[in-house]
Image (tube, rainbow, N blue to C red; front, side):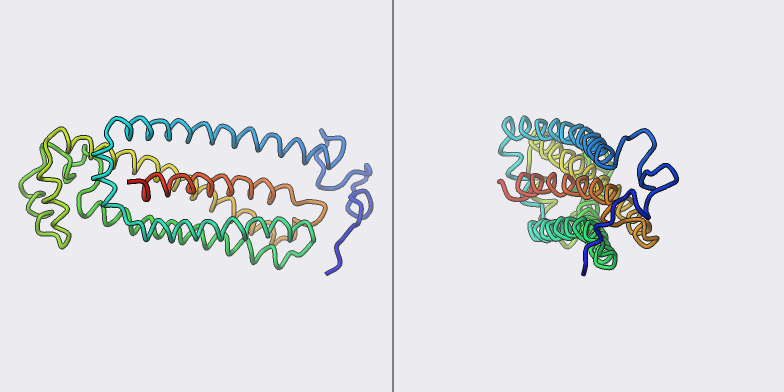
Length: 255
């Protein structure tokens, strides 16, 4: 396909000789793009610092209670974590490809790649729902919840229900722990839900952004002279993927 090399100041220009995509407080489209990208990187830096603080919490807890961490990690499903890793890696490739499609004016290919990225994000959330549902049913949840295996005041009814569950060995293994050990294992799952839940929230935010980009793409808003929004959205999605690349080995693989 022939690349559209038309200048923004030709048919795409307004009455003042500016591109229709150029905001009036910028001198040219290059300044607008560079400013937007700088602002996006500043925002992403705050996201990195936010998750860095959570990773420090992880490191402190793990170094102080390695036995509790090793015991608790056995209840995470590495298979689902690995599948989600592949799903996000694929989505990173397709969103980067969508940016390139926009730069080349390949609107149809751009939309296909954005839709694939959105489907990957949806698949990721479905898998997290499966993981969360199992843990909630078994009782591997926040110690503050009544049916949590780590709640020191767990009711007899909840204990009987958990013991009768098909994965009853989980209950019996945790029941054998001392009160202090059970407390620290419970904190592992608090950290697990905190880290993966916040990451999941960012995935949902990314799905909103991707849906918005798809709608704009269907209107024909993007092309060689206007791909800023897709570029910035892709940057955000890469950061979401990068955070999971750290979460997966830290939570699922290192025992």
